[in-house]
Image (cartoon, rainbow, N blue to C red; front, side, top):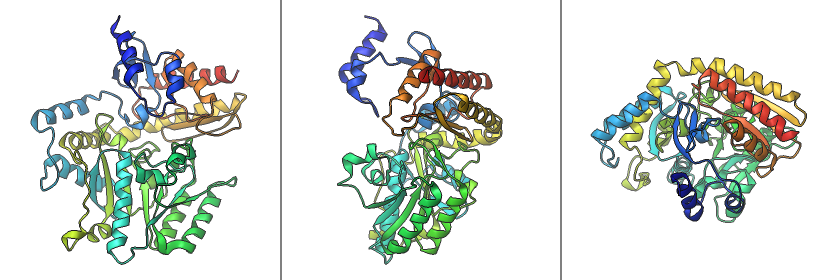
Length: 431
């Protein structure tokens, strides 16, 4: 038995894969067996390479083995791999906090670390709930989010989720969340409905939670930044916290460093992860205003008694600090602008293919809808996935939405090849 065959045997006997219907998986074709990843590519056990079209679930924004990130991780590993952050501090955590605040929208002044995007949002939710509980408004226990929203996997964050397939099994046990449906008229209707919801229930609402400008898991739905400005004005008027989930949209994915910059708004809370640690380690941060931080001062019982074992760990903090330095010194955002224009043209050209009903692009995101039916479980995307895999690209369609979100610094030749594969795969899947 070869090493590859042994891995496949162990996989099928013991592994349970995320976001994977395991019955078809176990009965279907063999999965990729990867041995390494470098730059914008995976390499399988047979030596074939595949362009990573979605930056490994959106986190490898600088590719897979950026030498500066690897060097920073190696140096920190030999010095101090892990210490708790309770009653202890260290240079990577403190320096990173200062660097994140300097990058963030104005008014965000404190940083709380956790593990991943889900926990960054969970932290935000618990901070909002506890703030109102101990600052005179304990009845504020509800949240508002959009239908189609995705904010993570933990039970708290699941309440915010507007992707029905993901939320349905837990609907009876999650926190109370008002989901505003964009409806057939789009986001203008959604935000009008949100205004109505806040006007009628503002005394019970702790926060509005949004993915700024792009709803990722909903199928790369994009909306006008003016509508985000309207929500900021609305939440300020009703003194309700605005939480922006920049886990996907941050670190230049939509062009500016934070997607909130499209609307020139500053939230009360900002969540970040994924690209924060360059895809090397789980690491996340939740940034808050000084008002929220001050709401936890005073008697000991007012403290935020929350924290994960590895929150603020030196390895993740040191790598994240190096990520920020790479963005500055290698002018990553400037380089991504030209690549973004190439992505936009390629996805606009997909509209010439019969069966492509809609396309859009923003920054280093390109997306196209195939057919008239929407839904995460629609099968047409899987046909594109198989066609692309045979041609040397790893796509992860969202139902009938085919998209790319490659590393921001993807080599131009790799990007051109990827976009050619997307076009050929869509044509083959719709033929």
